[in-house]
Image 1: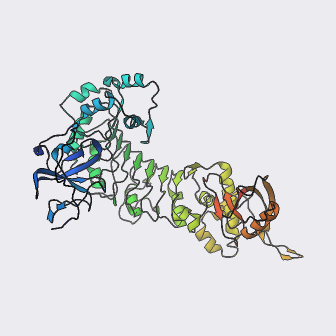
Image 2: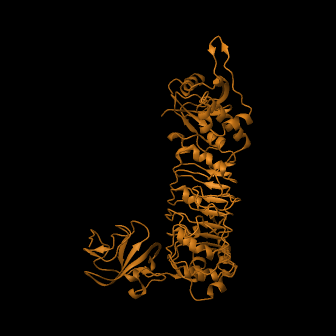
Image 3: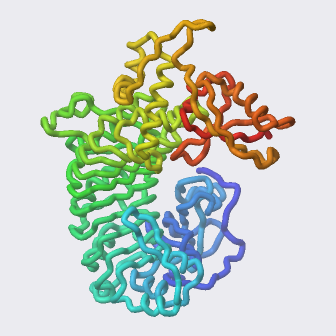
Length: 556
């Protein structure tokens, strides 16, 4: 038996004021039941024990709270392990009257829309956009709005987040009260049984959007009826795995958006086929903030024909690849027909905050047949401070991208990026053509498209001149606070000018006597300028092209 150093058991238990769903009877609670603290509907947990605690009178309820740090022990007291909690300090022993077993959906509706609203409750009044973003309702004419919201039969969208909803209530009442409801947010409530969710949805025939985030749902999804009208289902942070998703998909045959953020999903677990099948109308799948690390798992999603947007930000992926032969899964494991193209409809792929390091992964994105919107920010490959490449290199290597890291790639930016990229590559691979083509697969195509010719090295008074010694136009802007207001200068400089040399020139151009300059390259479409900290690198090598803007700051 484990011991604990601290307990939340009081010497003399005192009764707190009861709230909705509170009860004096310990018989109202059972192991596995979802509860919240009386007076605090956001302090939610699961009952793990009901019974006596040695040294204290009466019956206690052992609760394992959802959020770390809300308890004081691990389910043990004075050397006795009454139950096993998730963590060392997630559990509490609580008197029954200090817990609520929840209220019905319609009771919550009364609390939210017919009671006097607090500011916190007003902040929770919002509608869901098509991409599951909250759009707050602006309370202009508060009384008029509250009057309208109190007429339940007119409501098309309802938010009952964190109100302690634990059951549908009597049969038929929901459908009579909310006949036109299309959007329902049940975030952070006490519902745990999918059968109850099914009952609620069946009584709301017009319901299209359902949010069950931050709930703890049971694993059994077998008894859910067909919910033909559900188009958007939000299951963020509910502990669901892909095996449950597979069981759930038959109940929502017309689902168009599925949000599964923060569910600790490590793999796409399938029972039979090599790829996910079904989801005939699914066009957005959100798997952000999970634990996916192997691109083979992502390829299991490649047969969802209608999938247009795949959100994979903040996972642990370290590579991307696309199968060379569309009749296999990339490992030669499955034949799926000559006309099959993996991710055939995918036009948006968000991969920010992963661990992608290699440019080969970037190049593989050109093989996706419809991909135009890509996010690679917060990956080593795009972090110039960690040997990553700047934005213009990514644009040049990605032939079809129209939106990169959330910013539109204009025709002008694409042209400038591709020309800068070709000239940069030309300075590095004058002789080794084979290595050049292996590392830069688009180089020859871009060089030919933009009509960039090799410059023969003429012999002059000062000997051979390199092709990279052409002049480029650079605008210098002072931004340092102690430098003072100075007009921007546009100068023609050799592309071989080093960063260190340019710093010296800035001291001369702007007459900086006691200020050491620090330079940044400002690029179109990039929210933050890039620090130029390699004094030995030439302007060509760091991607400074014609008509570039360089910010002149000061060393602190």
